[in-house]
Image (cartoon, rainbow over all chains, first blue to last red; front, top):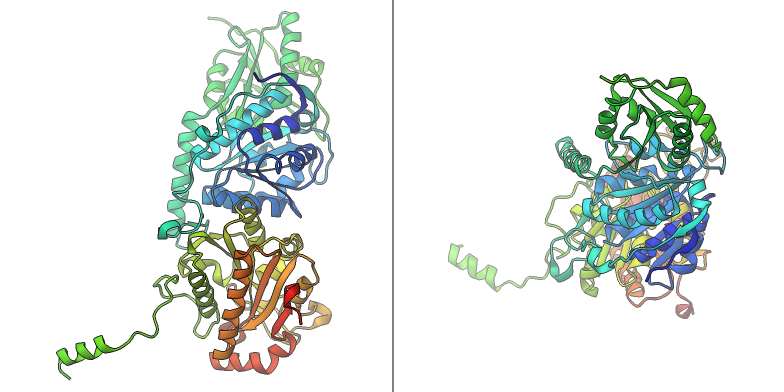
Length: 358
Length: 262
């Protein structure tokens, strides 16, 4: 039986990764994700994987590239400035179609910023970040349990679509302790055999395998782009994940992800106590984004408020989904500050009106 | 000679040379006289002779040899500029039985990838670095490299490299030899038949160390030419190596494994 354990988010994620059959971890210290690196340094060698503390995030992501290209289940983790440094490598990994798991425990920016939690990396996580047209599947947990759960899902999705999957979390979820239960997971059953394309050596004289993102002829480069875009359309069709809370009778909708969604949930409860019919939609997959779900709900409410720990990044996607049908407001705190439920309630009251029923 | 007699003569002739089996039968894109083709052949001969094709993984750089996998018929990963050794570390740490080598130019290894190079060697990661040093950025059109000799003219040192403004030519093999993780470091050339034979021996030796699981990183630097970038004929470029370049980049072993020391 898998028993309940009290763990930090960073450690739960690390433990889940090892249980998911992690073969290699490559990382560099940065607050607030260092517990993850430290956990791996303690545990991974003992449990059959390779651990390297790299000389930089640039080296880390390129170690991931190498090992993923050779067919291994591998990952790295970092926090915002380190994630910025990894962008070139991620662009290569996306183009070369290598499966791997990335973790960004976001802190406040820009610049060296702060070590406090933030959601200021939405753009670089969801809109590409590096050069060229590419996407990652981006999963946003909002609890220690989900930090663990999404790790298994992330590895499996990475294998299934041959692409990097990013867990976009933040310093608070990484650092806080909650109970977590690790699900049963059959590594052999779930791990994909990559020998049809990975660089393993030309076993039995088979054809050469090449991992590259270079296509010098424009026609070839466009073709590779089309392959990627086709894959992304499939993902948009099949992998949208979101949660709705009290949206059935809602006159007004909050949209928030990750830690903000937990706080927004509190604000929903406060509003309901005062008789305001407020609901919450929490995007879980930030890419693919739940455009359709938000569009559908926008027809039923009088207005929407997006809450983020940023100057307003995801709100652009919410506005794309709503397409002007109802007003979309924004409330955010920046630089490591966390929005409070009563602050959100204040904002709701400024925008709230009961939906005129037909 | 009648056709029949001609066939008989051909049949009776013994084949003494053939294309290296692990090179693709493809025309290469290197400029006439360039050393890359020779070094490609030497590595593939060594891999074939050592019988490790089925577990060999090459890492191509960014630079003239970015398309090395079009010629080297082994599994290959093309790494980001300067990151070949990090890529190799990733593979080798998860799959220690694989035989891994990086193939990098001087811009890739000694400029943008200096950090990755030093730390891979400092960790003593057990793979081979083949370092082609021709003192110039060939692919991008002949700009100054960290290895460009003092006074040498390039497209970004048009009046010759002024060390006060542009820094000095870097002997990175000697720097790396200071690190305990370096197992075997040698500097070779391919501008004469004799040099080619010696370079082949060095490459084969380095791969053998890796096959035997010997402790540390091996680096074979090949001081090579760039006729196009140097604005010389191939012949002139090979002579220039002998006359000028080898004075600064002296050929020979720089660090050998402990038990081989005399």
